[in-house]
Image 1 (cartoon, rainbow, N blue to C red):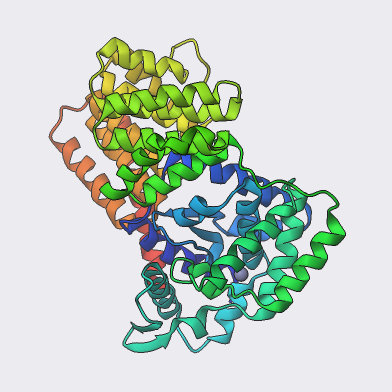
Image 2 (tube, rainbow, N blue to C red):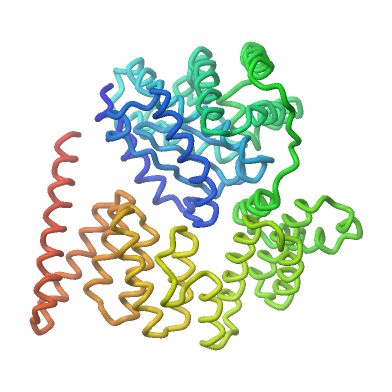
Length: 478
Ligand SMILES: [Zn+2]
């Protein structure tokens, strides 16, 4: 299977994942995972595992799923699926890097293409449907492996699993990539331990990753020899404050039920709370404040948040997480005056004198602040910042969505529709994009023509023709 064909198959699968109600683009968790993923990609590039050709042809995008089960999987075409459940159980960045490095290596070593070639009697459509079916099944521990896909019963296990040799190769190359990227080798070991413990408890329902990655004795022996050769120092697995907070966030987002949210309150009020290590306290307070805020109990959320601020005061990266949470709590409470909302924006650099934000959570929270304040100046400023951002990140669907909302608030319906169309394009939903561009064209027929409208009209026409040509090319391939 060529890399171009693999990419097309990957796009087809990713389009469905973006449409899945479980798909989540949480800017704060996405930012964290990117801070691990980008160094891994760079290391793979330096080591020659990631060739320029593959880099250009594949997507290299991570798709987050809200699911509570522990799973990560390489998909065709350079897409990587990661469940929030995985982010909720890792104890360090290094552990997460070990899993991502392993999955990345399945892609760079073209393991997927090799599996596809073995199944050459199947069409890409069938393979795509099979992968999606297997993913759906992996979300629910009670579903058996027998899937009905395309009129055939297939065993997902047999068809999709990499061979033992491929797994060992992904371990070996992934280990090299993660250590070269500056992550601790120990993360590979502690992640293995974690999986082994789950495996002993026979907890594979919560750990679909274990079903696709059985811990064979060869894999464990390989790992032990590699680590004892490579590293002389041992690391504690105590998470950093920021890591504990992000883990708590992944737990809240993947388990938003009332019971779970109450449980955070219990943990925060527990008598043993003050005896816990600081990172654990930070995680509990983060989870408790976030849950209280979502249960519409802003007063409680603010009290817990104030405690969290004290604990994180001397740690810069934990403070950044605290700042973002503070803005979220303020926005969700909806009880602030316009000046108070704008003051929240100032904590994350929304003032006119501040430079363009470099972190995505800052930018997207600024957009929410501007929208809630409704202040013209704030909206103008954020519209500009989003436009600048999108020049470098044209596939940032969420940024396009916020830009669309900001344009609508500025009473610029044509631009709003076009931004919404771009958001659809970024998630490969071309039909949805064409719908919005058509709506924009219809709107144009009913407004008096001005030169500004004229420019907008020609952009809309061009974009619509481009997307229609893309759809035509794709349907010709089937
Ligand atoms: Zn693997």
